[in-house]
Image 1 (cartoon, rainbow, N blue to C red):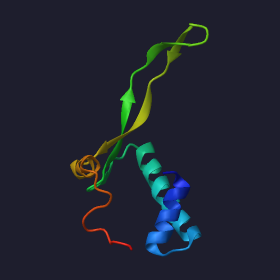
Image 2 (tube, rainbow, N blue to C red):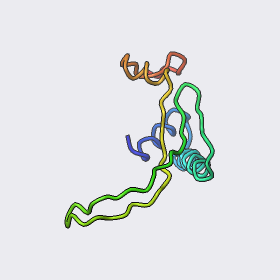
Image 3 (tube, one colour):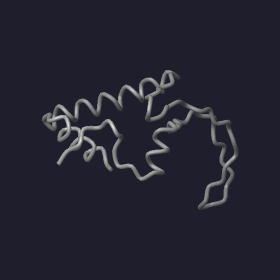
Length: 103
């Protein structure tokens, strides 16, 4: 699913215009990115949590030339799915039990 697909799905399920749905999706993504940037952890119950992890500096290799390259330390985003999400994915459940059903 792409971001455009997600916007279309929000628009359809919430019965909003595509423009309003786009604002909602963009706002959620921007909020997650801003929180991770300042080092906050985001926890969405029943879905999972986002946080950053620190990577140590290391020596890598340029795959084309084989030359050694210093890779600096950096923060990377990390997502940990909740037990409920893992269970739904592994059980093949398409939607949560409390989600509205559409015909």
